[in-house]
Length: 297
Ligand SMILES: [Zn+2]
Image (cartoon, rainbow, N blue to C red; front, side):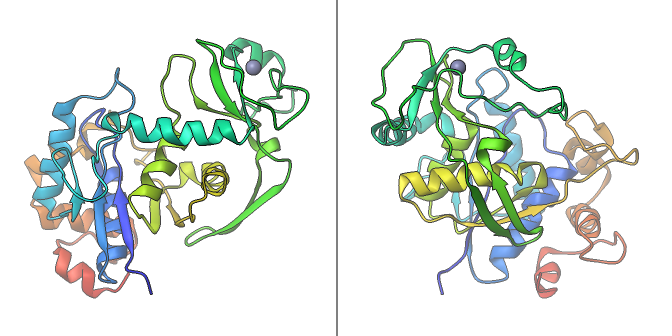
């Protein structure tokens, strides 16, 4: 059996909070309990929100908790580096060229308002489905470069099925779920979907554990894995941690930020709080990583 390779891929847009720690801990335990390795990747593709100071704090907080990574980080060197997305443009570029060569990409200059104007009233759950406005009449078709336009990828009108380790069997039809999606924005920014697939595939990641807000986007990623000729990893989407009001934790919930947690608790206490949230232990008592590993999660 292949040695499991997991990863933690935070965005350095603020101090981590309990929700991030919970996901990191579950991912770390999942691979470490089976003798696997764990990669830290910094997802800083949004230059407006990403700051190197936050990336340093993420590393410092993980060290403080004892969640050590085998590969990656800001200064990480290794067979699959660099491990910082803003230094990996050449790899995304190469993948994009392969997608374009498949004849399934086309330029799109639609604004958000244009796209919203095409939505039917029943699609009011916040999801926006691109209707293929700019898609050439015959596909596949050679990519006609148009500077300043986004690059969209045509999706098939068919079900994509996968088994999520936590959420069970999933079936998503991308044509109905999101429509043809953007792989590179008009301003040149890479889409999350493309970058995450290229990174996980080239870094040899075998299991992607992350928050369940990304559950359905796994189908877009499976489609990209297929087009790029990569094997899909196993997916495991964990429930997001909510505050007492039942609202998803954000970087604004100060009392659950790592800054506050480190001022008021020991590492074992914070691990206990996260492990309790994950229902690994019956109450939030202090616990070490080695004791958590014995629980065989
Ligand atoms: Zn368009």
